[in-house]
Image (cartoon, rainbow, N blue to C red):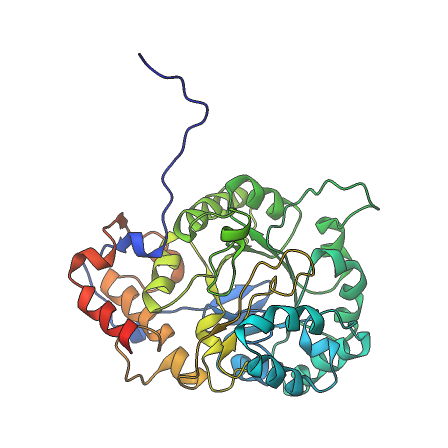
Amino acid sequence: MAIPQFKQLRPAYGFDEVAIVPGDVTVNPDQTNIDFKIGKITFSIPILAAAMDAVTDVKMAILMSQLGGLALLHLEGIQTRYDNPEEIYAEIAQASDSQVTALLQKIYSAPIKENLIGERIQAVKKAKATCAASVTPANTKRFAPLTAEAKADILFVQSTVTTARHVSKSYRGLVFAELCQSIPMPVVVGNCVSYSACLELMRTGVSGVLVGVGPGAACTTREVLGVGVPQITATMDCAAAREQYKKESGRYVPIITDGGFTKGSDVCKAVVAGADAVMIGSLFAKAKEAPGHGYHWGMSHPHPALPRGTRIKVGTSSSLEQILFGPTSVTDGRENLAGALRTAMGVCGVTTIPEMQKVEMVIAPSIVTEGKIWQLSALKGS
């Protein structure tokens, strides 16, 4: 007898479960254009460094801007709680695995100093770099005016899951439509993973949406809460929302796939899935210029009651410039991310990101089953 279904599951795919189909024509990689825009600001590479304390400080934000990308300052992190954040980074790096979560909870319980918000932003602007600042929805009303006063260029509003409608017994919550009208800069919000949530966020007037819940190397949201959608499926669903919103409004709102990137092929696959840009954490935490001393931890790790992250040792591999542009001596795709994207576009016969978004992609066996087991074993042993 047929058993009635309570609910139906659909397949969802991550980076390692798909492959890009090459084109019938090839193009020289140096003829590709990988520009990316947020509002009226154009970046020469579609790559952002995450608003995570182990990834982005003032120096990293300046350098990332000079290299053509964008790094986000975490306005609720170490940079705005401590006058001398370098001392705090050293303390975190020296802590044992059994002590580090409690230490982070203590460190992040220190109050945010509002004067440091302006000082950090102005330090980036003084270097003539593009400054992006990240806040959580709970603190946006308080910090957005300070961010605007300090002349930041873009405001990111981020939490594990962000929606256009929030039900609460407390005071009137954050209304994105009002926020976009109240500050003189583009507002990017996230994170989401579904078509409907992304579409509703775009309808509020935001200038970009971050896609991804729980895929990051230092994030344990999927283990703790069981919430999230693999990045290829999440990106495709949100890209469909972007196209629908463009049809109904005439306005194009970029989506940024955020989290889960381990190599250049992941960046290429995210773009083919529909991303306009990508946001990366752990790969940049490995950079010589990163402030985390070879460690990386999630933004939800210091939660006082339900930590959803872990400190991971990523090591220090190479410079930020090498990670973005090479030259590289490693063969696993961890460096020259921009070069990987340009080369993939070349073999697919396309010259722009919008064209790359239309390239065919197929469901594929995990790379482990396609003869790469020796490569992966060698990596684990190294």
